[in-house]
Length: 94
Image (cartoon, rainbow, N blue to C red; front, side, top):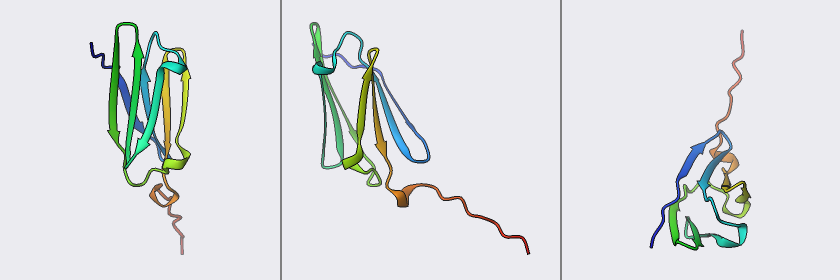
């Protein structure tokens, strides 16, 4: 049977963060990979497996993606390239 875990995605000025709720799984049950700008999460547990894929923006530094699994929640941090980050413009007073 197929199981679809809940996934939250949000953006900060310097990264995109993906959080997946994966209760009952261990780190060894989860597979994450990136190919052709697509991030794929896969996992398997006693009553089903899942696979979710997400298209990444071109501004993501794929070689710097990090993932942390804690208390049944997987957090994948996708850093943006420097040129994609918002820049604060200083206003001069004359």
